[in-house]
Image (cartoon, rainbow over the protein chains, first blue to last red):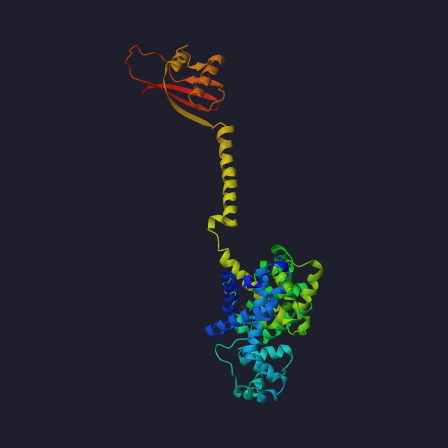
Length: 254
Length: 195
């Protein structure tokens, strides 16, 4: 299909397509109100400016895929519009960047304070021992957090963690990290991050898709323009590299 | 989805808005229909742009969910595994069965046992003379042909041994007789008994 064949009104009158758009919103939000408002927002945005976004379709991809990408882009906009740019309370901001990071991780992204400590150490935002960290986060504990059970953000891993829980993909890196104690976990995550930085852009994306977003290898392979078997071979080599780097730092499975 | 890996390796920064990949390019990436020449630029961008990466991976999830609805798991007998299993079964059947066929058809069994109704043709060949050990090659050859006609898988005999001379019963209503045949080591051992 090319742009001359696009009839936006016809597209948006198709029951099947509308169901797909609605399904995207349902996947992103657990709250029914959010789902409905998201769906209305997406439809309004698609109709805006005489269907400008739909008319931008040039027929270089399948229409359905284009609609999925477009809808997901609009869902991100909807999320921002609905929840706005979140602000860190002044009482936290005055403590410094490390405190802001803790607030973002714990209040917005629903990590525990313990997890936040590890991430801060990895990012080099907090150098002190754990006891000192626990003492210094006291003002953050008392800061207001408008987060509520239905609050979600695209940056919220708590939301994304629930995808792909069918157990079809084994994530050896995540599995290893989960088994380690705090000190070794901190070291392991640092090694993993540094190892990824040294990879080619292609390998970085492959690792992100398969071990970060837990997409099936065959799906990631399609994005990369590889066959599934070639992607599996490449991942095998990459895992060997991770293992080598982790062992070099004395990190092994307990 | 693993929180540690997701948090550790997610793209960190977001380029300026005008730098984002187009929606159609993200759709093409999800479909795997990008060109080699442009892919490198896309990969560089996706490793640094949270928004574009999120759109891509959410699109991939939607496509997977859609294909799961439209292409539900086929019945097991239509899966590749079933086809492979069937093919393997056929191969095994031929391998194992072939060996058995070879053994049975190409190599004569070491011992053949049979009990045949003593019809006139068999009586005639038994009555040709009283010798217990047959020496006449033509007679032996004719016996082989008769046995083959009755379904015995015998190709040739080196000798024939009769357990006792055969004499025709005088009574027309005498008891029916059978010929017990045992072929071993290329020699046929024959014995006539009443049925």
